[in-house]
Length: 331
Image 1: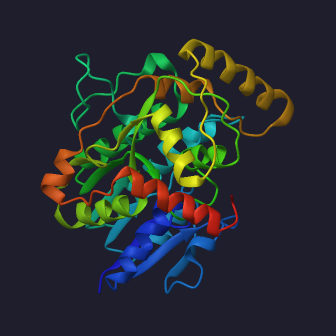
Image 2 (image 1 turned 180 degrees about the vertical axis):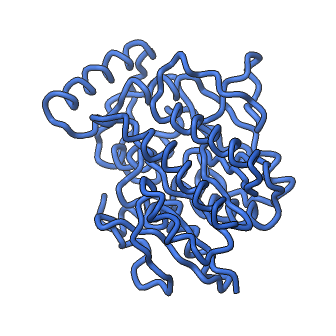
């Protein structure tokens, strides 16, 4: 049986992917670092290899003997004291994985990108797989890093590496240990840390649907293809999302709606406090507000039509997320 390597397997999406692969009886090897939290993959019948995506030598050792690679590892942060780390992990790390895979003759790679790498159509229509990134002027470190990583992927495809890109929407569901910025939205609501909302919106997808999308892309997508992974109809305004979390979580929803500019000022103050005083992630950042205020809608029909991507509805996703956090003692 072919051995499969999964990078980022101790994280949110990566662990969900590993569990799904194991249910199909796959032979799995994963990369871990010395500081990795192994809770998500503890006791699973998988091979662990110490490797950092910043080290091409580590990656060649990890990939050697594997015929397929899921490159899920990445840094998903809306606030950091050193944003250069985003490029080291998301861009250079991707280059290292693909270089190692190319050198070792891997049969196929699925690269985990994000709808963050999509642009905004001028006519306001939903962004599809061909919508070029055009948000450089907003200076969004995470979004820029995911866009640049996709450029690296296309470079290696042109060199002959069979690689597919998948772009998940904002992922929620069980297993978000750290949490990611999406999980933090839920936890901040459950802990009463959201005093207001603003006119923003986002597409949300279930983590297990994203894991399924990765596997479907590996099995059925042609090299060079890109697929947006999400659920048609799961776009939600921030006010509606907060009210849904509040209803399902048994807490109060914020009733004060702030103008976007006011929310931006509030986020800047919080970020300054985080940068210079607390050194802890703030409740909101200017980058958060800028991207959500775009209310960018995404077209996921290609993944549904070609891959048969599962479609979990928003209410069920939020319910699963809240229940997991409560069962794990986060809330």
